Length: 247
Ligand SMILES: [Fe+2]
Ligand SMILES: [Fe+2]
Image (tube, rainbow, N blue to C red):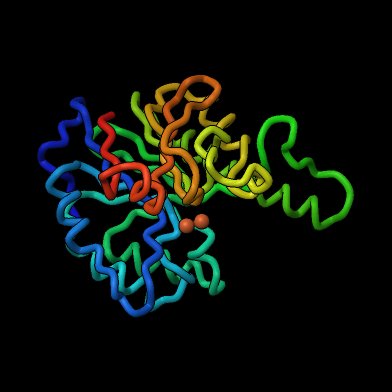
């Protein structure tokens, strides 16, 4: 994949984004046509995790095959489903070989815009965030959330661009979870991610997936637009299969 010639270093960049493709082993659903359409309409593709159903190599290979139809630069994060078979590195490698730049604490600059990201993790929001108190299991759980947040922080720190886009699987705000049962908000994202986004200047948009029944738009405390682009949500709430944001 090569950078689109339309993407001038200082001009607006059209970023097409979608999450939760949940590619299956049987490849009954192909994304070739979708990726071809996105390539004609946008300068960059950003995929927000749950790229496969169970994190099987066959599923990743199917998606890798479809990604051949993508002719613009593509970045993405893994989601919890991509970890299910215990081989996320293998899944990431297959997709990387198909041209997808995996954001797991790394950062990339495309057309003058920085792309930062990580899968993220759960933990809750506001006063109800889980704190590392008590059993070792609780502390390990909170530590996992802190570590994912540190990945996001290091990727943002690497960038020197004036404009930045953040790609996550889990949500950084509660607002884009509205529609999900409130009892599970804490399992759909973490306020730590939103707080980190707000510590950096120049973040123009945050994309995430995971909350299939959530809401499409929200904002961080500092006003950065947050887009929940889980594919089932887009299918339900919009006419589109992906969202294009100009940054
Ligand atoms: Fe999902
Ligand atoms: Fe998910």
